[in-house]
Length: 221
Image (cartoon, rainbow, N blue to C red; front, side, top):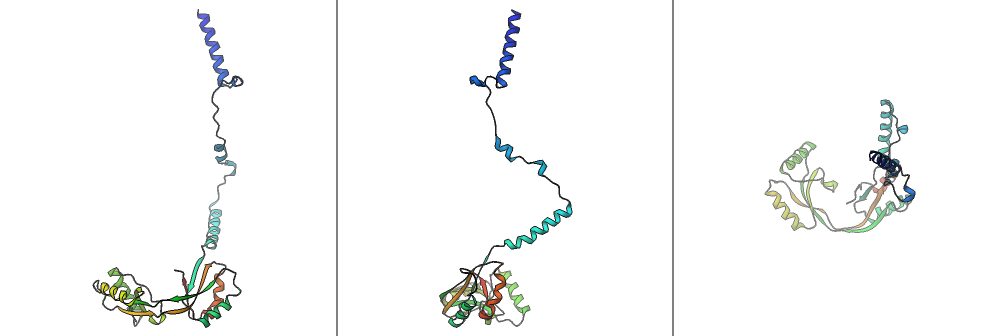
């Protein structure tokens, strides 16, 4: 009986060994094969890893810092409304620019009113007024009309009644010296738009300055 048990154990061990080693796979018997070749592809290759000295690392960081500004996103710039004679001069100056880099379209701008504070005698007085408005939590900006500088614009409106209504609201918040001013009458003309001002084109803005004269370019709105 003992011999039979020993013989059975030997046969069982032999069968398990053959099963575990895949020797029985031709007969469809064997362990499940687990393989994930993509994990091998994702493994780091230690022979390709190199520790950089501190000096070489700083040099690489400096190169990246120099390249970063070149990847800056393009900017859209637009002019105020240009009268027909000035628009013609600007159009001539842009003839050598790449196609599609600029447009000069006819526009009609409605009249506009602003809540205005100014003009101020000196930069110190302007700075004091700005500080007072910040303390009151009131937003402000520089007026678009250069003739109103130095001053502050507390809002822009498409009608005088709406500007007067906002003025009354600001009075209740402590604003005393603001008044409604027509910032612009209705204007008909042309607007220049440089939709994709890249670093490559930006130096060429100097070519436009004589044609634009005192007209400034602002980010598109």
